[in-house]
Length: 162
Image (cartoon, rainbow, N blue to C red; front, side, top):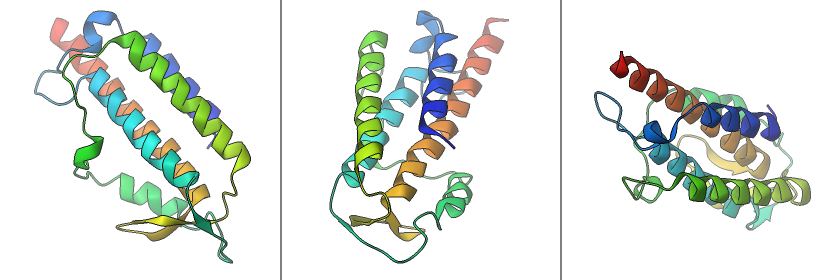
């Protein structure tokens, strides 16, 4: 999995959404596309802070828990309060600009940080201590998971129009 591929897929998905649907609540409830995007950005900032934070060298395979991440993320989970969307209506351009800036920061961190270190400031509840490389995969897996949610929301909104 590659960060550029995931971010490009998200851009392509978002390009298919009209402005009206961006802040529409899907039939049956749930987050709007804009709220889902806000959540992705909040989670990416949180992971970025950990990647650039304190780390300790490790002898274990720095990618050992990536497969487990996929398993964990296939199980629905309660969103941490600080990662929940904070608004009901969002400006599309502002979210787009924020996302581009966050992605630039992530690219820089992935290029400059020692991703083999274990993150000192965080232990994932189901996984324990994780490396910065594993956190970078969290960003990609999490983004892809919510990109699927955005696509499902698009389908629900389109079905409601017919």
